[in-house]
Image 1 (cartoon, rainbow, N blue to C red):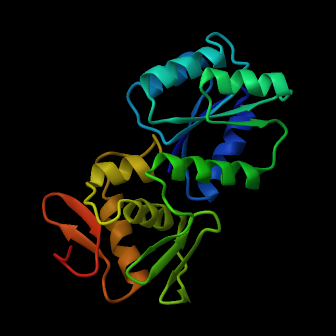
Image 2 (image 1 turned 30 degrees about the horizontal axis):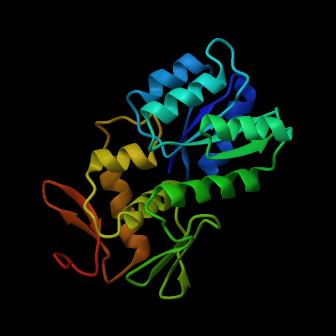
Length: 224
């Protein structure tokens, strides 16, 4: 999952970014509404965490713009305006969810996971394929009932591949979905991470290379 945090308080934005990264969620930051619109214009996100009271372009206008121009990005308003009428107004603008400050990080992550499942063709809460079970919320992976310890990036990469349900994803797509904006597009991070992920998951291999195209999850090389 990839998230855009739109928050003018830099310390809070960075704190949220740190927590999300610890949960294997790629997260970028925009400190005002204009920056958010610019980023959304060229980068795809699963969810935007949006503060309403932004300097310059108000958060409400960012929400309106996002709903009209990037409908694939869910909007979770994260704001101090927590009265009932504020929430009603937020939903009327097109927000998909609303969380008032102060908030608890576990609840924030749970809401993000729920929005992501809604956005990705009703993904189940726990992903299962070829003996591997992945729980995005608990950050746990098991293969044939045995716990598999993964790094955050290995977990994020496996999650993206399993969400594709056997579809082939290019290295560029994987980099976009599992890394943040600081990722080097010319890096070999995908190849290295796939290699270590295969070793941790063991045999039989479930992540396969499609020559010249990318990677896919499957029961065996070339199998459907």
